[in-house]
Image (cartoon, rainbow over all chains, first blue to last red):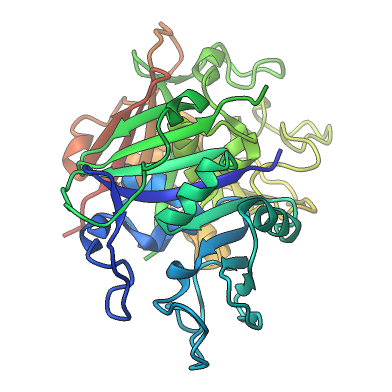
Length: 214
Length: 214
């Protein structure tokens, strides 16, 4: 059974998961504080941090486990909007993007795919969530598909009821503005079972598992 | 920095981590109840269970992350003692042992190495913990070494202060007898920082990280 998963979705106490404005200097807008206790070194395994190993790291490390493709929104890929400026932009991540799988970028503006030596490739698709998911599943080699964000993209997939597993990390800060994650999702808890655990860092990890579909 | 790690060490409330007697029928003696909430499907990643994903599974899944070799005691490998009976015993695990790395088995009775197609190999060594660790580190390809148990072996490595990371899972049952894990380790907490988290299953995960050595 192959699942569609969301990992490490950092959300403030007031429900914001990104800043309003994304610029070259601020890939996540004004919401950088969300990432203060996130450890990106462990997304492919706890050994990436070299120790000590925390419960937070164990939770963050699920990101790469058994994932064969990612779908992301255009704003996660870059700050541009509208037609691509033809400036050679290949994402925020340099020569070795952390994904190491095919990634499908949702955009109305198509362009050529980009491939990297580490297994990452970027494919630009103008597609509905359902269509994009089908493409990603075909590319995932029997593994799971990750919906990589940003929050608007995660919200669209949740509204379309395409998410099987959602790992939310509640960060005890108050941002006051930004991109809301819970809009248009009233009653989401009826479709999911939720397990929560809080750690010594102050973070709360919520694991939302989709109930069996009737 | 390469570490020596212990994972998923299941311990009863009264401190037992295995049964007294290991037989062909009972690989962990009378302590099978320790494993009632353990999910071995996720040791190489949460996708192994096919969902739903729990906090316990996230913790269990650290087992395989970044590990390049294992050291185990002879009793984990099989129920025999003394000279090997020459009966073709190759461990409990059939043709595809779950380790997928070189494994070093501590025994006074040497025998030929065994190799499996899935990357697992068994090497029999009559060595001190320090010597065995050196062999395992050489074989680990720059990754971490896991001390795989049983509890007597873990205890020896803890007493020799060779463990950098110890993941204990407290199982709220009372066994009354078996192999004790905490013997000869009084004051162990002074060498480690410990973080604990309890889950909805009733298990408590303790992450013991060795403090920096002076």
